[in-house]
Length: 343
View 1 (cartoon, rainbow, N blue to C red):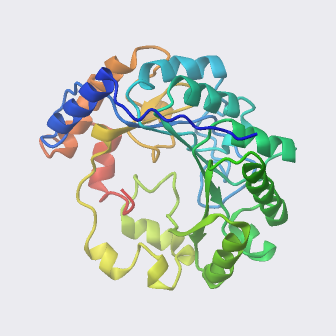
View 2: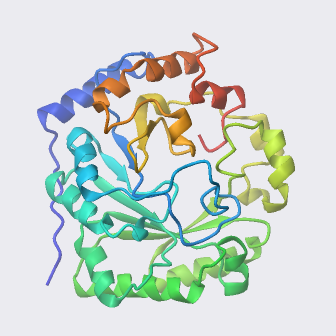
């Protein structure tokens, strides 16, 4: 049986108007917007089964409440943003597959809003995964699956993906690839994303060859300093603390002298994207870990339209457009600390 993907190639009047208003208002950095973001991150939960050292979830940071997004609450979000969004990322501060409703959310999105490209990023250490589970992933309509695998051998892999089992991850990849073949499905496209650190940079070529053998794509991604603190500390301070993780090969580092000399000077995210925490807190991007403290509103307490053009979002846009200081927004804090390089 072949799994068909019916993609909506036309733009509805609402999506066309959204695109037009974005094209008009974003270049002039308007504070009040008459369009919705086309790229949306919805966190399915901030719980993870691994203990990655540069991730606040992995280090068991206790400043935030842990939990999982329910399917019913997910529908409250998607009904507001689905008609105009183009990409939906189901990941942020946790492992998406730990939420038992994940594939139900994916199926609901791809059925109701077939124009939306759905992306999941996973460490693929999935509890009780099976060949049947692999078929469910393929049948869900998931468009893109990012595989976070930072090593070609168990000894190297587990130095960062603490608690992970490389053998199980590779087995799960094979099961999904096999399910795609059986179901004659082109999706999800799968990419092995190998974050390059100092301890694993010697395994990049080996991992690339393994990805080729598995018939999945491969990218050598650039590591980041402590993800929970990077927008709150100057770059120099972050590098002093986390410098031992930075790879020596400049090809795989975003912290070279050249990169640091040509820093990103602007951020368009408050005009283009949004991240929604599992409990409804809305923040301008996925870099904000403590959403309870730094959110711009809560989508379960007010409409997204009210949040998107609320006072905190407008102050943040004003700060990034260099028209104000002292806004006390997380966007201004990030700007004052020099913006992370990946922005």
